[in-house]
Length: 130
Length: 384
Image (cartoon, rainbow over all chains, first blue to last red; front, side):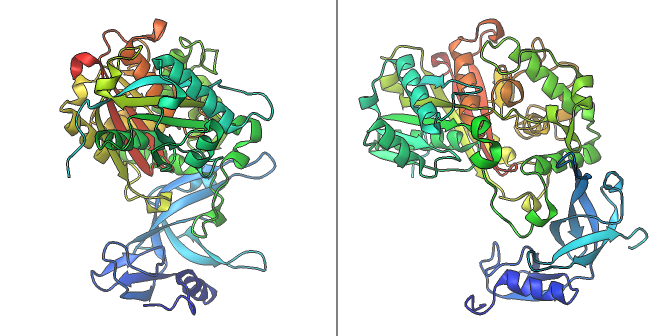
């Protein structure tokens, strides 16, 4: 059981991001990947949660192009199915937002944090990556 | 534990507040109170008869407390379940259980919003979520847009199919004197409107207007003596599946696939026996998903089912005859108004847009980002 007075699930996730790693948990009771990180595993209610590091490859499950404001270029928002068996929201960078397609292979990288914002996971195209 | 009984309670009063754009400084509670007064007049009951209170609203955090204060009533039973736009279908199911258990006899379900007046950002502020907020989705729109994109990818649904939903809603709205939209709409206009979150243009998205509503529910026995024909609750089903779109297991299958069968089982009927369908159309994809998940067409066929004017006036199935959240009214959490139209259709009060011999109507509510799904089947006294 994590001591929530000392570490938090998101805190550990961010520590990994700061090392360039996309971390996730596995509930060792039923060997199921868990994401977002939690203090207690969903369904089993177990506290046997182990941290693992993803290889960082995934597939776009769905995508949208957001037109937020007239003075800003449109940006994409995606849901990525990571190969280890969990899904997260993200964005695909280095590509025109309308060219981001469902089924596209993508690779994780860190969007670094700063004083105002925490780091977070983004993706870039990884065509050809199996 | 006993299950709720088919037809044991009935909606006896139903009314909207003023809709659209209300005067400056009008409060959501003013709208709830106005709708309540109209719903009481609709059935001939008095405020003092109300002993059960059900409220949900994004601008009134402690709904039952605030409306009880405004109306100075002391309900014996109250419930502030808030699961987005389907809250009120959930309230109706809970009211039935409470009335059957003798915890109250006359339940008031109320809603009000001034989101057009105060802005949507102010009326319904988003919670920060580290796992989503940094990517700047426009919520809830982008979540529904991703469901639409996935449906298009998996089943060949097109933007034209989506636009058919908006066009059908507009055709119905033109027969509803209190609908917000007054001008005809074409598929072309939907497709060429301002893009908001691909594949949705602004015409794929519900209205942002002020408004509220109230429904009065009582036992079938008491309903008999009231002003209008009772509209019985034949079946209800409630289901939760997730809170955030990144945690929805399959973006093409909603929990309506659970709430629908529950409601149909309780009612002892099949989708083919439903005369009119009132579905929460927050976005053009939602009626498509719900028609599939509630059993009106096979999974994946929703886009084709709504096309060719099949859900418009004169089509195969009467869907959202009020004009829906897309063209009639969408004051934030629209589910209560979804039920009001179904009730009116069963009563035969819909004038030009009345569905002939409407004895059974389905009202389906959706909340969050396809997160909560609640289904209600209403029936005329002849169906009980």
